[in-house]
Each structure stands twice: as C-alpha cells, then as structure tokens.
Image (cartoon, rainbow, N blue to C red; front, side):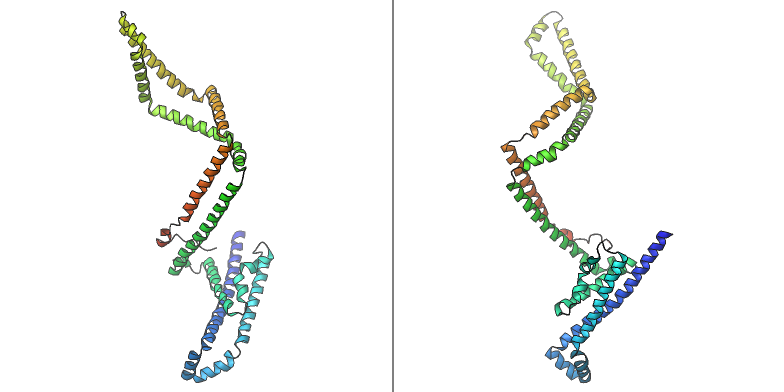
Length: 342
C-alpha cells in the first residue's frame, strides 16, 4: 500500500508538472509565432503587401505590437525566467538531482532561451520535447509509434555511432603512441597482468588439455590402437633379429605371439596413461611441466619486449580499422527497436 501511495503521489506530481509544461509550451509557441511574424513584418515587401491588403490591421500592429515588441518579448522572458526559478526550486525541494546547482546545467536550453537574443530565442522550442517526454512517461502518448520518432531515432543512433567511433579511434591512437613511447610496458604487462593470473592460466590449460586427450582417445580409440599396432608390426617386420627368429623352428609363431603381445601392451599403456591423467602423480608432472613452460613463455629480453609492443600496436590498429568500418547499412535498413525515453 505504501509503494502504491508513493507511486500515485509521483504520478500526480508528474501530472501537475505536465500541466505547467503545457502552459509554458503554449506561451513558447505564441512567443515564437510572434517573433516569426514580427521578423516577416519587418521585411519591406511583406510590410507593403500587408498594408495594402489590411491597412487597419497593419496600422494597429505597427503601433501596438511592432513598436513595443522588445517590451512584449521581455514580458515573455520574465515569465520564462520565473519558470526556470520555479522549476529550480521544485527540483531542490524534490531532491531531483544530486547537487542543488545541477538544474541549470540539465535545463540549459531553458536558461539560454531566456536570453533575449534572436539566435537564442529559438532554443525555447526545446521545451516541446521536454513536454513530450513527460507525457510519454505519464502514458498519455506513445511516441514510439510515430513515424517522425522512427526517423529521429534512426539518425540519433547514427550520430551516437559516429561520435563513439571518433572517440574510440582517438583513444586507440593515443594508446598506440603510449606503447611506442613506453619502455617498460611489456614488463608491466607480464608482471602486473600475466603473472598474477599464472595459476588460473595453468589450471585452465591443464583442464583443457586433459579434456581434449580424454575425448580424443575415447572417440578414436580403435583407430589409435590400430595405428600403434601397425607401427609395432612394421617395426618387427623390419627388425633383423626377428628375421633370424623366424628361421628357427616355431619362429613364425613366436614372432606373431610377440607382435600381438607388444600391441596389447601398447594399447594398455595408452589406456592406462589416459585414465591416469586424473591421478596425483600425473597432475604433479603436468604442473611442473606447465610451470616451466610458463616461465619460459614470460621470459623477457629486448627481442620479446619489442615483439610484444609490435603485437599490441598491430592489434590496436586492427581494432581501429574495425571501428572505422561504420557499417552504414544498419542505419538504412529497418529501424532498431526503440526504447522508451526516461
């Protein structure tokens, strides 16, 4: 019940904000329409045409509005300044931002729009966007179904993609320069990145190697044993002592028996070796070999430092080329799924 009450209060508060936003947006529309009309009125051809078509309206507008336009616009500006101060006060009261002075930076378009300069007055139209977002949040409208929302959303993603690409390429370039200028980068990478993860890397390599050997032997056991038997049989055939043995009485049978025994012993050795991989003796041996391999791999000298730096620079260059491939087709195809504005 408490959560529901809080949600209702928040919705009621958003509704009041929306009503005030509608009022301000109407004033903005009236103000911008008046600015546009007065700008056109100042043009001599339009002024002459209006004077000939509606002289009374032309005279009234000339004397009451155009002559006092600066004061009228300052009246609108006073209301907009009051709106900024009121919104700032409400934001502080509602603790909407982490710091009390964040409001004018978040609503920069409202603050700048209060400046009575011709080029800055049109920033007031951004209030319409703020109103639409608030109405979207209240569920009164759904901009995601608007065609214009799809167009703006598509080019918004395009703009974000372009900006992020430029930032990433700039960062990659700076990183390549740092790699080239640094003398101890490879040492720091090995000492601070690779070595602290030594045991994890060795355990992962051991686990993968063990799984690979067990799976490979299980799936190809017949072929492996047949290949080993063929090697033993061929070695016995080529052995001179076996030729001498076959000349003796019962020599062929003895040689065949020896061939089968050696093949069986080799098959049992393979099976025992694969099954013994989980034993502590093999684990200790594999750990010792892996440890020596790891130390040899991270051994540093001038050539390894240079090779590692060149490798990093080339990898970053590939990443830069991948980022520069902007894949424009993604933005001319179907519109990506929209997410509701926050």
